[in-house]
Image (tube, rainbow, N blue to C red; front, side):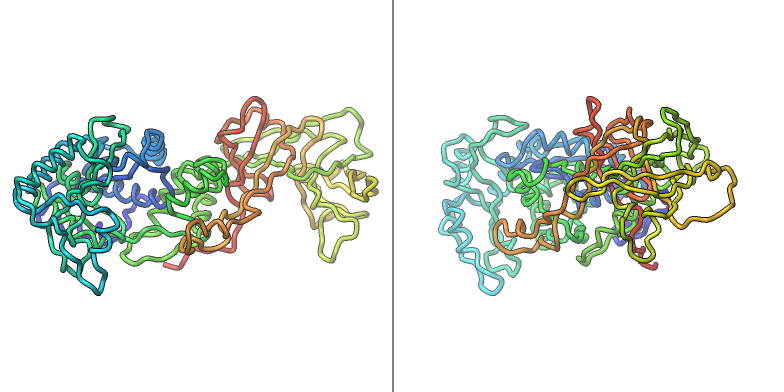
Length: 555
């Protein structure tokens, strides 16, 4: 269903102009995540943008891990990110790590010191914040700002050798404490951190700050279009300063676009990690999480996510996308892919009293009526069936067309049945319905004798396969991303974000494999859970309901 036409956006237009004017000869982009958590749907937008632009213009796209903060980073996150990018359908030209460039970054910091553009500062983090100034007040020079080049070189060398403790000294760029852009007020570019690194081990005890490392990485790799989100727009002057003052041979350019925000969705890796750490969810890949691994486990396809990311566009103004927009594209993708089947989530037993005991017949049904070439499946039919509890009412309201005493309905792919009686337990709950069927009304027989207004689904009882169904709603009741106060977004959790039902599916589902997807008649699209579908146990995750009132915006 993916449209092969390239969607125009302002970054694409810049690339077209750059190639036309000869400013670049080959487009090189990169996706540069920090390995401090699992990727989410917002990262998918950046992945698609970078890799698809490179592909369109026959350029190259790198995957690079910005691993400059070993306190928060882990190999687990590196592995998960690589898996997510590949699952989305992309192949990187180079796999790089910022940590592979640490020696080069150190040498470029030496260049700054020799030019009088960097100095070692003894102020601690709080003192640096206090002297930084505000949007309306200028900053104050550090008392260590005028150290000589020789003194700074010696101290920086001693920092590298591990002679100072964490936070005892930092290396700062020397720019302008009066600058209206706070990012240019002598920012820290190196700090001491005696922390083992997932890639370099104990080789380093000083690490570059992201804002210093990132432009150097881009320049080393020859990135032509460094694409990032709008929160880095104020950092662009420092990005350009680093490239120029460290005398990098290749000069990349940074371009910013609006990040993806979805309704009822937390998109902060810190907050997502809090959900995992506090056991609110079943890991980073919980189907309620907006992580790519969570969406995959829930049943979203890479095609649907790529199409969603392409269709929402690339702009320079922040906004919030209705999460139903994403649901729309998975429905469209699965409509022609997913086999149809019947599943009973809340079983109620039906006994067809005039059907021969011990007899089973097998009925034909299309696997997907919209794709005839998918063929037929066979469904058993016998005296005992299961239907949904909601498909029977003892005293129905007006315009209730399903089963009730004296009423007749069609069983999907089978016969008309009429309710004659029912049985209740001691608590007054209906536990069994007695019906009769009309043999002349078999589906596909051409019967035209009379009409019924209701069609319900069912599963034959003796061959039914037990299954668990997990029904999902948004994890967040409303837009909690901006909730103030540490952890206050947890107050917005939806207590009904997951509801579990025990029911039955058709016997052809007994060998279902993890990640198999189906459309259950009247219920929606479901995916066999990759974590719990094993050893004969079947768990289905609701991907999305069959229908929604949501409509695509008019173009």
